[in-house]
Image (cartoon, rainbow, N blue to C red; front, side, top):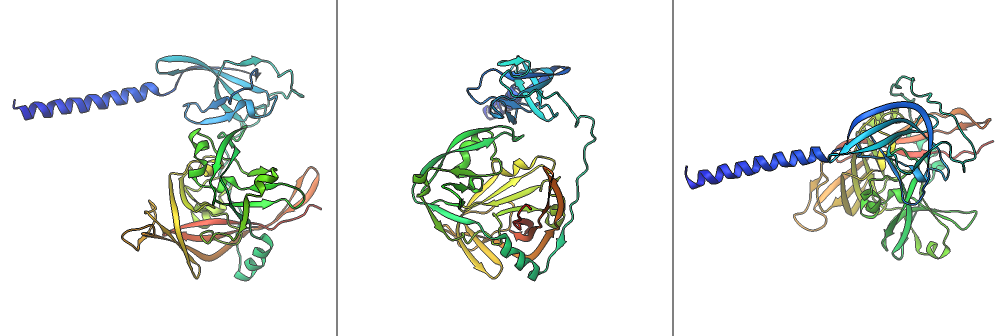
Length: 404
């Protein structure tokens, strides 16, 4: 055999061997349940509350719950004991649920004690009412088209959000949560000077509320690195000194008006109708600090994944408005979307079109009860947009209402 032939055979052997080694290593590093035992639901509680303690999904790839930060004295029910194997090592895990049968995930058995937490104020018996309930079918919600005149009147009642620009770099502890939304962990997030952020000043007292979840991956990455999500809500600031570091500015041009927070969901009107039970396969967030971020979603997942780490994040360098179209100029293509190359170099090479189709819809109001206080849930409004050649809807918000 020639020297060249020997080199080719050796290279192939190395390649194949390397591939086999990589595959074996990947399989060995996975978590696998090797044995399980169903048990009568039994209350357990954590005895230590120092560092965050996570419960995972059965593949140990997703953080499900922050157990020791759900409530100060919270009981969990063990419904199953399992053994997980990882890298050839077996470890005992508890499968936990709440007293109402909500799945909290799997956690190693250390640090737990059998029984109700003695510092708790009540002992709620286990009632897994959801266990025998059949899986619910996707629910279709009523939605009606509105005329331009009707929506113009509603838009005035919905109102607009306020926007602020930071005048100096600041660091805040932002609460991130696990997949179930139970418990949170404060993670330091640094907001650079000159950052645009949606906010609201409390008229009744010295407080300031910031929509931290509308910031870009670049800023929120410390939480994403921990495999966590941002819950609904925002960041409250009570420090008067820090409140002075926010300067009121106009709404950024890259965000659509009429109460939209720059969030878009694929699927058009059909997706709107099923939004309460099925996620859109693709969602886009135009962040307040000027990024276009794209997420790919499993329709059967929980809505919290809308705030997961985005698959793509591209900076908006310039915005131009012409009629009902916003042209967003980017330094690079937005993968999966139609972008027009308008320059051969520089920061404004690609143009992404956001077209407001002036096609709006309303979910009709309905009567409800809460704590024996009847009230009417107001109408919510939505608009249809084209972004990079794809159809999305965006929520515009609801008309404020007062309880009787």
